[in-house]
Structures are given as structure tokens and as C-alpha cells.
Image 1: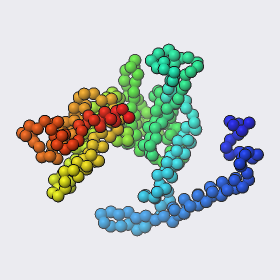
Image 2: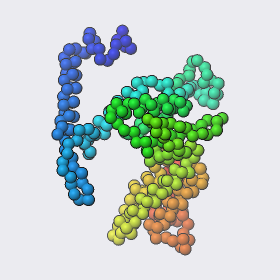
Image 3: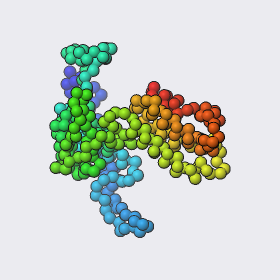
Image 4: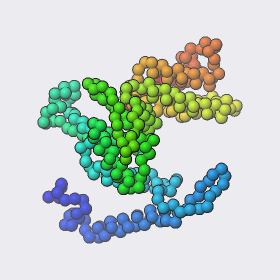
Length: 312
């Protein structure tokens, strides 16, 4: 009778549960709440502007910067906001029907009443980076209304200038900009946007993402030019280690998600080889083949880590 019929909070007449356990659990809630509150009671802060510090003033909301509890406290609060917004209502989510019996490419089998499973995709959440999904424009507007109301309930403000809408039409429909509003303000409709430092494009190709990766890796390489690459006394082996832990991860960030074509790999390889040649002070006039450069430094070409990431 217990399985599936009684909630976990009901502990009467159940094995290994008693009144002492319930009292202990209630005391634990009080104790943990008191500890967290003590971390924030009487909190004062100052504003530093061009070397001048303001008078101390109290902080009545938010979390302490640098506090080890801050990430968890914020995540819990934002999760509570979403629970308040949607309350497990999946009517606006994207439905995915699938089978696991091997009949993957026969779409007719997905209409069967047995052996077919369905999941819903409503949101992707990473701290405060929130990606909301909906099947139609009307459903997206409804979800945004729910989300906006919940944010007001929790004293949160949605940054309109950082909130964008990307419409991904089906193959049978032509593209048209979606008009989604938050409190009468129209959100910007875009063909691509940045999510967790990666570029998501309506065209679903990675050209924009590869250009962004090369730009950021070039910036990372340039910042270390005088500090590391041109610094005397630093061995080449140390420089290569810095290159592997700073520049390459920036260049290949999230490459596990890419559908890579030849022209993209050539772009990545060209940037990689140019950086390595600059480390070795090899110019174009020296006419040294790429394979000799790689052999000299003992590193594989960019194709190796790229392929390794693709098969993860």
C-alpha cells in the first residue's frame, strides 16, 4: 500500500520512521534556516569609485558576493520562481515522441499507441541563463506571461535588452519574425544569439560559431604575447603548455556539439598553425610545411582533438 499511494512526508506507521525522526527533521529545517540567515543579518557594503569608498549602507536583498552559499541559494530561488511560473504545466512545452526498439526512421511507427514514449522540453536553465522553448508563437507568449508574473512575485527584473527571440520554422513554412512581448515591450527578434558563450543560429550551421571561437582565441593569444610568448626565460615547453590550456580550449569550446564541415576545419587549422608558427618564430618565407612544425613541437594537428571531441 505504501508504494505510490503515500507521500514521503507521511511517516506514521511506516518502517524505520517515528515521531523522533519527524521532530529531528523539523529542528533541522529551523537550524539550517537560522544559519543561512545569520550569514546575511546586518550585512553592510560600500561602493568603490575611482579609489574613493562610499559610506557603508545595509543590504536587504540578494546574496553575498564570493559566499560559498551564494550559487546554491540563487539556484534554489530561481528554481522556485520557475515552479511558481509553470507549476508543472507542460501545455506550452515542445513534445518529443520517440521509440527505443530500433525503428528510428519510420515516422509512421511514432503514431502507434504502444511502445511510444513522449517527453516534454520546456526550458534549459544554467544559473540565471534561461532558455525557454515553445512550439508556437502563442504558446511562447503564454509562457513569457507566466514567467514575467513569477519574476515580479519574487522581486526579479527581466533584462529586456538581453532577452531575445529566435524563431525556428519547419521546412514547410516560411520564416517570419515572432512578436513576443513582456509587459507591452516587444522583445528583439534575431537570427542568432549567444547562449552560454556559444552561438545558436537559425540556419543551424556553425560558421558564426567558428568565427566567434577564432576571434576569442585570437584575443586570448594576443593577451599573452608580451607576458608569455615573447617573454625571455620561459622555455618553449612551458609556452606550449600555456597554449594548450588557454588558447586551444577557447578555440574548441563546445566543439562536441558541432556538425563540422571541411571549410570550418580548415579555418580552425589555419588559425592553430599560425599561432604555432609564431611561437616558433617561423615565417611564411621559411616555407616550412605544417607537418614539420607539428613534428618539431610534438603536438597533433587541430583535427585530432576535434575528432576526439566529436566521438565523445
